[in-house]
Length: 315
Ligand SMILES: Cc1cc2nc3c(=O)[nH]c(=O)nc-3n(C[C@H](O)[C@H](O)[C@H](O)COP(=O)(O)O)c2cc1C
Image (cartoon, rainbow, N blue to C red; front, side):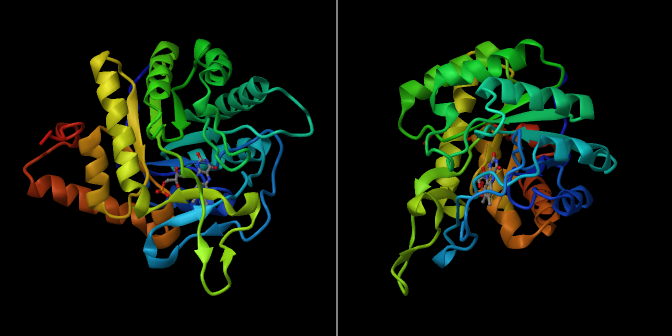
């Protein structure tokens, strides 16, 4: 499969400001290297009750959310595809699972959505196996379910397949099992990471939890998770390098300014995604990051980004 070229190597992360037609068109007009849709499910979903998102946690540590996969449903995104493609950049369909009235099993929901997206003209699929906000346990923590979902999709692959996963933190045996499986299935891209799952914050004035769904437990994004994301990116980079695997790593988590993106590249990412920063800065963030990355490369004597990917040094 042809290597994906994303210029600039920055896209939105699925979810923030990527749900509606208006939001997706704004991404199309921005300097984002691609348009990544909100994770779509079989049936449209209104998502969890509000308040379900606090974009700015006190002290700018990051965001917390438990959106519950609010989205238009895959047919809604299929209808938008030709408009989104008219912006001349790659359109990446993020696909997720949620129990719905059709009661289709997990793998059949992914399959039906994937085939429709391919027929509609999506350039790549990002299979979201890591939504922490429905049950608290992401599919990416269960190798058997990963195989159930990705096996059929990868077998008859027509366009590149990326997979969005949760951080493995200190579950290192699980990490190795999953990394091995992703190589065996021949996915093209691993996007790490989704929100840090199951975190909570408290409003001291009201002494209440800051979000309502799931008894206040949500996913963490923004500056506080940068070190977690860097560790996840680097761990995958080293693993795939050891086995000479061509899987690309897309880094996501904690990128607010260009230096954060540079750290992701040094750790092994070849493309980066921004979620919370898009909520904070709007679509101008893509041009700002792109300029900052170019300037850093020039100042440090590099003419191509590839020269720095994975080159972090040991002490
Ligand atoms: C409001 C909101 C909605 C999100 N929805 C999705 C989603 O639908 N699919 C997905 O893969 N990730 C989703 N995420 C996770 C982000 O894509 C990203 O992985 C995470 O926020 C970490 O990146 P950041 O530190 O740049 O925010 C969501 C995050 C936020 C803040």
